[in-house]
Amino acid sequence: IIPIEQKTLSKVEGINLGSKYRKADENTATSKRKPFDVDPDVVDRGTNAHARIQNSIAGILLENGIEPESPGNQSINFDIAWRFGAKHFLAEVKSTTVDNFEKQLRLGLGQILRYSSLILEENKAEIAPILVVEKILDKSWYATCSNVGVTLVSEKDISKFIQSIIS
Image (cartoon, rainbow, N blue to C red):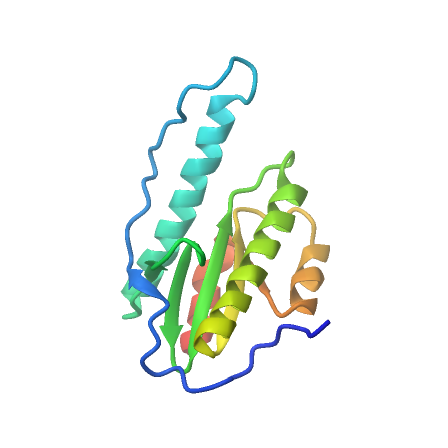
């Protein structure tokens, strides 16, 4: 197993990971499902929280003169990305509750690792993978993410995290 590290494989200049940021819809409603399959209010809460967090990241980036990006293709379907200096920051966003926390972090970590790997294969860019979650309910996830080169950030700390990058 080769660990994923944040290392430069070639120059980042001119690499375009995505396209101009498209604001996420914070007021979506779930389509009809079979009764009692899934509570649509729970699904809507998660979808809307995800969009709120994603749009918040985009807003913080824009306030700091950094252009957020949305995915440019379906095979690398990250939530939001941006470039600062020589690094491309690639973020996966997850809404979390007490009931879905573990599942959401497992899913998000797998997604961000996969997207980072695909980008490294295609572009040879320096990637900084980030998992942004609504709430961190189990602090051991900081070490889990760090051990595989992913930065875990809570919604409430995203502004401080971005400031630490640009300072």
